[in-house]
Structures are given as C-alpha cells and as structure tokens.
Image 1 (spheres, rainbow, N blue to C red):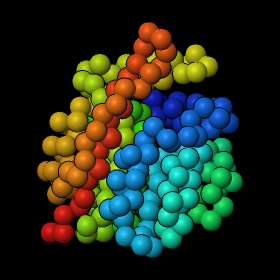
Image 2 (cartoon, rainbow, N blue to C red):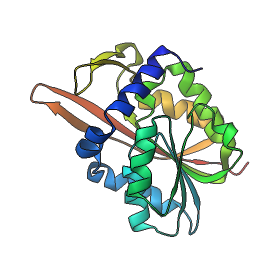
Image 3 (cartoon, helix red, strand yellow):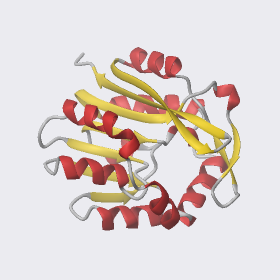
Image 4 (cartoon, rainbow, N blue to C red):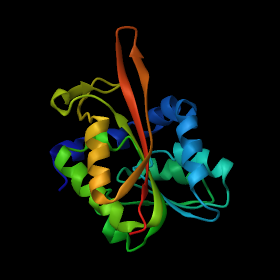
Amino acid sequence: MENAENRKAVELFNKLADSYQQRFFSVDAYQVDLDKFLLQVKQNSSILDIACGPGNISNHLLKKRPDLNLLGIDLAPNMISLAQINNPDARFQIHDALKLDALNQSFDALIVGFLFPYLSKEQVLVFLKSAHAILNPGGILYISTMEDQYENSRFRPSSTGELVMMHYYESSFLSQVLESLGFEILSVRTQEYVISENESDTDLIIISKKMNK
C-alpha cells in the first residue's frame, strides 16, 4: 500500500536524520503519556517501536525500564543507524510499518510515535488491524499524532522547505476505530505544539488496551 507520498516522506526522513535527531530527540513534552504507557506495561515485556526514527522514544523508555525487550523499526536506513547507536542494548531493523505481519512476532506493547501524519486514512485502518493482530491479549497500544479534521490534510514544508503530505485525525474517529477492533481506550490527551510565532498544531495522544477476548 506504499505510495509516492510515503516514499517521499521516507526519503526526506532519511536525508534529514541527523538534523531531525538534533531537533526532536527530547520527548519531554510527551513524558506524562509515556509514563502512563509504562505503568501499563509488565516487567520484561516485548515492545515494538514503530517508525522509531533515531530511537528517541526507545531511549526514554529504556532509561526508565531497562527490563524491556525492545525492537524498533523504520524505513529510513539512516534513522535505524542512529537508533542503534542511541540504544545499543535494543534491536533495530529496516521494516515497513504497513507490513507488521511480516515480522512473524507478537508483542506485549506497541509504540507509534507520529507515523499517522504520513499515512492516509485507508492506510491507518489497515495499520490498526495489523497492530491488533500482532498484539498479545491485554497488550498496550500508544499512538501520538496530530488532531484536526482529515479534510484539512495538506502538503506542508519540512524544515528544509521540501513539501510533504501531512494527514490529520480526530480523536473521536481513532477512538471509534480502536473500539470497533476490540481495544479499550485508557487515555486520550491533546496539547498544543507550537511551530512558530504564528502557527501551531494540536498533538493527540491515545493509549489503548487490547481486550482479552
């Protein structure tokens, strides 16, 4: 299901891996939610960090919970290289987030940090079904994205001026899809993300749990 927009986003992240790491490595703005996530995760759990980038979220999790067995995946080779350097005790590999079944592995928890802005609604639906399939019963799913009406999705410039398609999702839509798949919503939170003096986005963070049925 990969399309030209997906490929362009991957190429851009691969090209800007170093500058992305310098700018966005800190996840302090999401610490409240990541800590909520960790409270739900049992000792020695298997974690999949999807679209892991330079391993910034992985780094935060492993500093607090070195017991976790973490695998990170991303399609940008330069991001994977950085993630492995930043988290030498974890495993990282180049892998498509839309082909989770090809990992041939199940997990106790999934972290999805800002993948959805680069996926169409159709791709998100496919992804969430796959995520449900590879999660063990009682498994935890963490999603962070940007909230707005999907119709407001548009091309936006990157930090280097190149245009990339950004998709927006409403919390009500994602919550409804998650519940229909058999997830229990544990937490929904939004916060302002300041882009510049004249522009801001709304971060959306949802934590859910796969029901035991």
